[in-house]
Image (cartoon, rainbow, N blue to C red; front, side, top):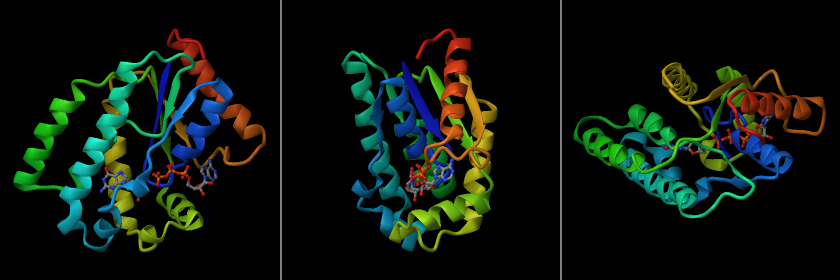
Length: 202
Ligand SMILES: Nc1ncnc2c1ncn2[C@@H]1O[C@H](COP(=O)(O)OP(=O)(O)OP(=O)(O)O)[C@@H](O)[C@H]1O
Ligand SMILES: Nc1nc(=O)c2ncn([C@H]3C[C@H](O)[C@@H](CO)O3)c2[nH]1
């Protein structure tokens, strides 16, 4: 069983991936964004650092996810990202020959990765995302541009409107699974039901 959680910045992907991994007896597969040395620079000058930031993410995501093919998944994996995320961000930040080169690389690498058994797409309005980003307090995200978050949310909507793999869409502002309570049980039950409908067991 391989589950991936996706959604725009601050939607609650890592929080949900940890919870599901714990409840389903699976391994969490988490991205460490702080490992990308270009990311703080990207937020200072998006045009200048977009390509470097993207290629770093692309390679590290590819390396992490390709390990899924190489070893047996005993208890399953819950990842806090989908490989497709890379191209969603790239489509907003790259253009011209850099975008063409990036897309060539992305397409080549994506062919080699398995799709998840279930993807959970977390949706939330931009003001909720901004509040969660503020609350989490990563220094380089302090001046997060609401227009960038809006464009990103729209790109996610377009992507999942034509997504061809098993998908569960959750309104992430309606469920507070970040603390113990009935919403945690509710979200785990929704995922289990979806897996059962798709013929998988958790
Ligand atoms: N369902 C929720 N309800 C309320 N707060 C939440 C919820 N999910 C996450 N949070 C809080 O929002 C903040 C962001 O959550 P989290 O880091 O899981 O988001 P993310 O989608 O993984 O972010 P990023 O895209 O930056 O990696 C955290 O402070 C977390 O505690
Ligand atoms: N430029 C760019 N490309 C990506 O593929 C990408 N993936 C994540 N991020 C940024 C968003 C959050 O600040 C932080 C955590 O998600 O990292 C990205 N930024």
